[in-house]
Image 1 (spheres, helix red, strand yellow):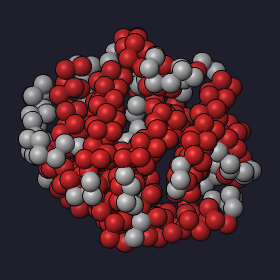
Image 2: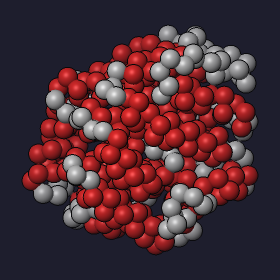
Image 3: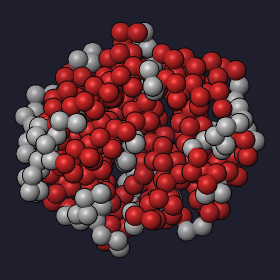
Image 4: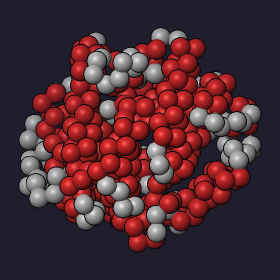
Length: 357
């Protein structure tokens, strides 16, 4: 990692992450008021254990003036928290009811549709969360409608969200059925060079939505919106979700959850697949007129995932090194995946301080 990466990472950690952490604390206070004990536990866990999803989703705010950065952080915090909460409700509820999954995820389509009336998202369940999800939906609607010229990016955002909801409805089905359903839905039409699980992974990321919000805050237009969408979907988004599965493979196996990296069949094939898609992601970043923020975001995402303790715990440091090289990161594998030492240690320590502010 070069000096410019380090400087940008520090700017992000000092200027953006504390804002995101404060926004999450406000949402957590509301989550603690959910009457149903299990739903309250899932809502709080989605914030406490997945806060880095919101932090990472805000990374492009590093390149925005302060007022616009706050706007971007607010949008990411409300929408991504809803995304993570719903993921918990589907992952940990012991349900395999596709109707339930689809009803819950109507919330995300409503969230990106300002003016839409929140529906009864819990209609396939015995109880609800006392209005918590409704409030996240309304908060997200207010953030999206406040974007300049939201109508320019709205069709892209809705398509991204609908693909995400389709994936969530299918990937939580029972084993065997979920793989067949995802292959039917995502095995063609995403990109000719992607396998079905790679195409499915590309549909599981919210980063394209946040990149489009960033672009419009920067004064983008229909032309730049199209370019940003095409850069992020499917390669940057696919790389994002495959990295998430890369670090979570052991946990997903324990819980019997579908893991797209496991679909490669072997460790070597998985390493090649992630490296190939990472390289394609960087190629698409480089084509953007305003390339630096997107290159930095992609590299920082890779660095963060590959430095998680579970990489070393699963014996995947060599794989992390290869994936890092594919996006222009050079590091010593044994150091990079270690919590206490190595070139990332100061940044990780700063990150831990930033989220406690």
